[in-house]
Length: 322
Image 1 (cartoon, rainbow, N blue to C red):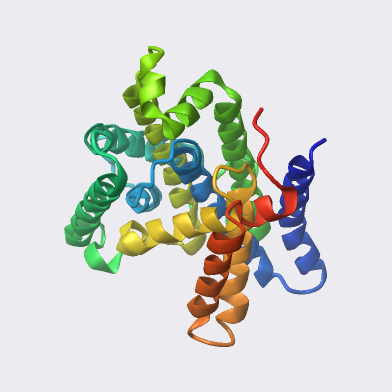
Image 2: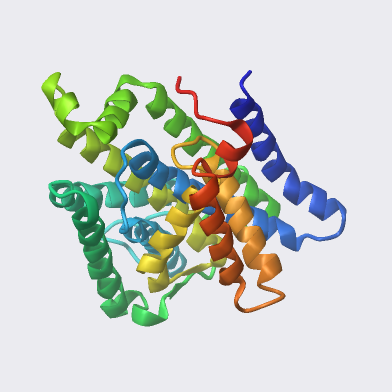
């Protein structure tokens, strides 16, 4: 077993053990922090498909994150008030919310990706940012679902066999989704589709010369990336019992990119390591100083200058594919 696989297992085992260990020690609050880590890691895993494998620096993934959040909030609101949505009575079910969030984000990604992927470099960054801001302002003006005040979720949507009101059960759901997201990422990376996606990132002209068209490959990767990020957004809204326009704002996109860079771009466990470190810094340094982002910036600077493989690359060495 390679060093990176051992490290991946250790990181996942550490995240899984965190809420159980802290509860046993009498600190149940850390279960919520562990759930936040798992959810942000899942969102970063989604972005890592586009960024890490495809080299697509998207500054618009906050839009997909927010779409997931509003899917959870809208379904929960209609279910609680017994109001039909588009003529249908929807149950307050998390799997249903994930399906709706993924479909909505996939549709938006197909439309915006078909336009954005005709550009590259800084133009791709700016056009994805522009689309995300358009959706952000739409949510702010959407008074039926809270507008700029956001949408509260009085009762979380349900999950078969588990009580979503119990923090440990909600963590297990988020952790299970994270494992599923990591499995999808790994399967894509080792597949011929993933090989073509990574090859297009390295040299688009050579890929086209051997008869592979990069555009549809990138578009499918962009859509898959958006769908996973939307499911994470749905869980984020369930955790906070609130869907806010801030989930759609550009700082959220930047936060997801920071998680990937900290952990390791294109690495399986990179987003998980990055999310765990980010949440720990946010909580512990945030309790000491309001300017905790200064120290995050220093750490990010160090990673970019001296450890471009992120934390995972620093410990496990260069990536091995397959």
